[in-house]
Amino acid sequence: MTTRQVKITAITGALAVALGAFGAHSLKTLIDAAQMETFRTASLYHFIHVLPMVIIALRRGEHHPALDQSFYLWLAGIACFSGSLYILSIRFLLGLDQIPFLGPITPVGGVLFIAGWLNLLRYKPAQHSHHQH
Image (cartoon, rainbow, N blue to C red):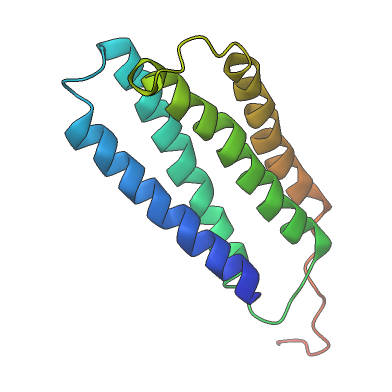
């Protein structure tokens, strides 16, 4: 377990809940159905990727570079994919409707999510010296 990863996951998870609640309760009357669907997609992928992050953050004893790398790839994916979709869905409310660079950030975030999952192929559990019979 790394304290840093636990703190990052706690903040990321809290943000997932807060943003999900904000979207469900505050945005319905402010944005159209397509924008709401975009916000929900951001929230869904945010939540999905916090789950393996918390598992990695709370692991005991074993530290494997592939797990740590996947953790940070998913964190970057949340920032790029979900972050860009959150902003894109409410950009008119924020007065950011002329920002052209957000759209291309979303697929970069998707690639980071995929890379995090594929990176797990590099994981090899530590071998224990005792055998169970």
